[in-house]
Length: 245
Image: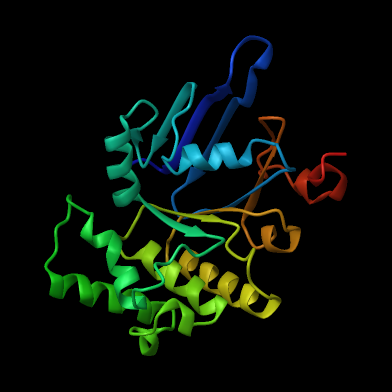
């Protein structure tokens, strides 16, 4: 088993051609070790969203290599990427992305329905989803729909859904962006708990007070890694860097 959950080398992503060419990523190389908690920061247009789409197997790079949990995924087909997403990555989104007509339990069960590599019976799926909800402190809210839950509780359901397939990587995209300060603190406490239990977490955020929760900050600007956080305080914590001044 590789010591790196994420390893990218000379990653590029180019949109358009000729005079209209845009290099959203321009030779990005970085690694995230198993069990690490990393924040990705950068100003608007820095390439961090493009990078996260590739790390999440939602898009493919134009060039370079990406190994996820030891497997080269940079040139997989769309169907192959979908399978990797389901089996290897647990997503936590800013907007929660819960299905409004389903209960918390049913929302958490969904990834198990599409996990052909580890098929489970309906009873097993329900048990695993219930255990995931219990792990995030919502064991007594299994049958509530999203509209019956607070924003913080909805994000907890989303985290339970991210955990249910026991992924190699939790990818959190602005996980506190739609939450008040109290709920944000609770979600960060939960991510810390998961990290302490061995989870590998990569989190995109534009908020310095959220980013400092991570072990290190990957600072991205102009499609390149400005600093990977291994050499002291991140330049992305400087307001002028973050806003692109």
